[in-house]
Length: 128
Image 1 (cartoon, rainbow, N blue to C red):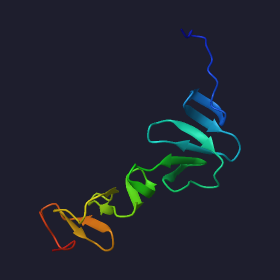
Image 2 (image 1 turned 45 degrees about the vertical axis):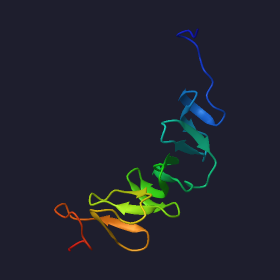
Image 3 (image 1 turned 135 degrees about the horizontal axis):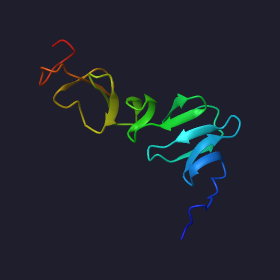
Image 4 (image 1 turned 180 degrees about the horizontal axis):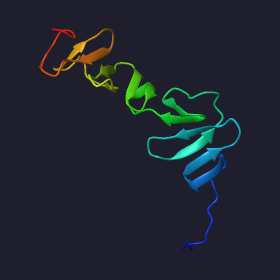
C-alpha cells in the first residue's frame, strides 16, 4: 500500500511531474509533449512533429486521432491518404473516411468537403 508521504520518481525525461505519466516541465530545449490521453513526456525534437501542434513555448499537443497535421485542437490541416478533410461552418475541421462528401457538405477541391449553410440539406458550393 502506498503511504501519504511516498514519493514516486518522474519519468527519465521529466524535470518535474505530477505523477509517473504526467511531466510538468522538461530540461533545456526539450519539448513538453501532451498526448490526447492527458499523459505527457519530454522529447528532444527541434519543433513539433507531424501529428502535433505548438501549444505554447516549448510545448506540443497531439492532434486528434484522425489528423496527420493540425493547427490546434479543433483544426485538422491534412488527413491520411483517402480520408476527406471536413471543413465545418464553425471554422473547425477534422478527417473522415467517407467515399465522397455526404449530404450537407459539398466538394471544395481535392479531398476537401465544406459544410453547407445552415438552411441547406444539400448544396453545390457556399452560395447554392
